[in-house]
Image (cartoon, rainbow, N blue to C red):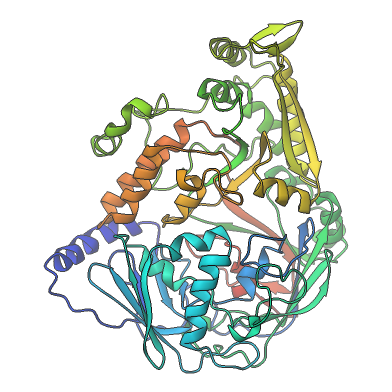
Length: 605
């Protein structure tokens, strides 16, 4: 499905809502489900539109990651897990088509059925569905997975469990979940819970499994070799149960997937140049244009592939912890934004080739529009007008520097705001009324090369205001622990947002989890307006209402001045061995975490 999804879905969604409003349409089983309208692919589809059904099987792909790992359980809060594991080794009842927002197709489940008002959902398992050890997937496994992840799992799974009123087996291979609140997305979320094997964990500690064993999944890839903290190898299961499914046709083509871990991004790049890695994602446009002239690239043994996308920019940058002074004051956060000379920094670090993120959903139809809020957005936000950050309703634009290293006009505005907030310069140091200096530490993961360069330039600008900024570099385990415990002033931040935002938004910036260890709400946002806009998104019955709520949410988040945004990744950049091939057709979501492992392949020819 193309990027005009919302326009086309509006007409379809309006028609569907009119029918559902009469409550006369009976529920019936389908091969897939969409938030609005119907799935684009018919029940008899041959393969996903961005896969090659004739792709050969074999070979391997070797990836690199900066950092380390001390756990093989990606479903609990404890431990530092290779992020790839969750995408490569586990499956769900339904699965995403990355060419359609808000659309899922049957994977472990052969069909899905839901009430017209989405108050319940019923799944029927495929009879052939198997775990990697060959044992059948049962309804008992499914129910156990829901409950275990909902009560012992990572925070990303727990919120859903509290919204289930009942969960019951309705047949040999079917179960029904009934929900206790109105939320149209819950039927989709139910289909995206990982399914694990209950019998594996009888008498064992699921939460503290660490490196002792990985949870058994149903996917084509299984853990093969582990060199603790250094490398992880997965192999393709020759007896994988789902290789004949249309959804899997032309996917999961590599025999082996390996991840090598490095302490520094520069060392990782040297390993790629030497041929130790066969795939490398590049996030710096300047490096993409200047660093790939090494011998293997010149000989044609390394290929550069650019992958377009139509998803939102998401938010990348430096997040400020509003639980701590002085970042609990919006004026201080605005001053920090004014002092961040983006135009000069991006020119220095990326050669000016990457444009700035302007809001959380920028680069998409869900982004707030320039200028004042629309009438529909204002109607949603007006009840919270007294508590909204300045600029929410009137229109907020990130500060723009003059392109010079001095950035004097913005620094003058920053100083005025700091003085208004009670800060004064004494002997060249900014301090508050109690005489405490304005000293800030930015938590960085070792090997974050680009961020180290950014912090050096930013620190020089803040020094002119009397602010001391220093980087604290820690290893991956310490970084993960500090992030979990919310122990930081500022830190690097990335939230990859989609065209189908939903319940995960509560985990990202909902007030209910603002102070919960392990929350993804790193900035500590606690806003009734944010909570209300998320609620509105989840109960919207047509694409237009959904889009209005998303734009209103984008306004509150952006005007909240929680993050100092850097550049957006408007295209994916992947350098790879010439023997690794791409279908050449990409979904509207572009380079997602599982795209290469799922749809690319190895061939000597």
